[in-house]
Image 1 (cartoon, rainbow, N blue to C red):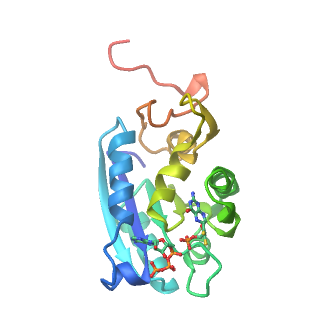
Image 2 (cartoon, rainbow, N blue to C red):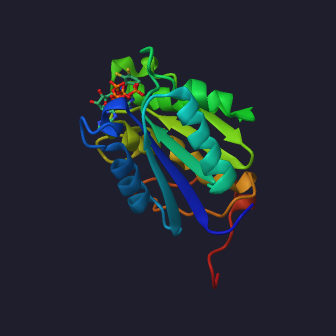
Length: 197
Ligand SMILES: Nc1ncnc2c1ncn2[C@@H]1O[C@H](COP(=O)(O)OP(=O)(O)OP(=O)(O)O)[C@@H](O)[C@H]1O
Ligand SMILES: Nc1nc2c(c(=O)[nH]1)N[C@H]1C(S)=C(S)[C@@H](COP(=O)(O)O)O[C@H]1N2
């Protein structure tokens, strides 16, 4: 499974999906990826309510039919009864990637004491990585990028640092990032030389 990088973005919100407020989830994800990725990519976007069957079918469609290498969800990860994104994600998972949820909560604790309320998970379905991000639009940058000190040095790695190598291990495309936003980490043996080097 390779080809051009394809990324699914799913905003899960009862109110944004019914027009009570404007969806800021998909635009925040799109803007962050546009700034962070050096590799060209194609997006498939969805805005849906907090309904478990609809979340499950959307994730399956994006992975199985659209062929997304990465799917990022935002919203519905908390403990409220209608927050069912992690449950839907686990229901369509082939394998769990517990490090992603653990690291996102670590990062988020630097921003909000309620970080532990997010039940967000990372999973693999087929050869696609699916990550749940919290619903607060600002949490997208926080969890993907990590925490920096006053001098701009990364003190807690955001989870996106591990996404390119994960997708490479799943036989997806080779993803390069802009290090000023997030540096992609790979073992030396997995680094591909740039053209002409
Ligand atoms: N798609 C979105 N666009 C803009 N703001 C959002 C969006 N999703 C969530 N938020 C903001 O982040 C907060 C926490 O998100 P959460 O996923 O818990 O939403 P919620 O309170 O369950 O409501 P809803 O599902 O109707 O967005 C929301 O109360 C809202 O202020
Ligand atoms: N980085 C980050 N993580 C965060 C937050 C945040 O603002 N920033 N909000 C927390 C709160 S208040 C809740 S309830 C949970 C779940 O949020 P969700 O239901 O919007 O997904 O995410 C937590 N994680």
